[in-house]
Length: 137
Image 1 (cartoon, one colour):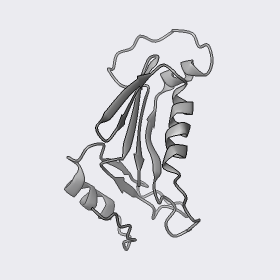
Image 2: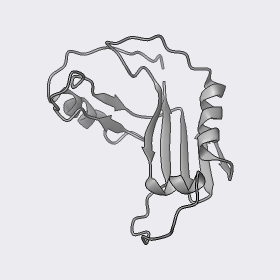
Image 3: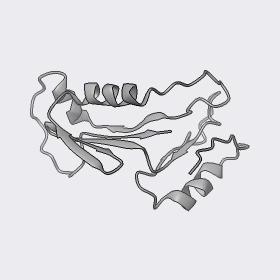
């Protein structure tokens, strides 16, 4: 499959319409500007089916590349950096297309425990990863 990036005309609901078509794809994500009244509100990002995923829960990060799945207890930020370097991604600056590929996902508050010692004040009520990142081309 040949990857192709295209820039679409902006409308308030365009991203929602495009996302609906791919929402069932693996790791589909929508970053919507929320119709905010700021100068960059025309940028919405719709992605799916990343080439690599990293999912951290407590001290273990699962890395999935094609048919290979590995586990690591190394720093998840360093693991993400290493995966990005391995792909050797390069992008040119384009103010009309600010996201051309790269890492996109969530970083939970508890991931901060990998950086510094934090008190255990809140009980964990959700079964949610500390980090879930897809790398998109």
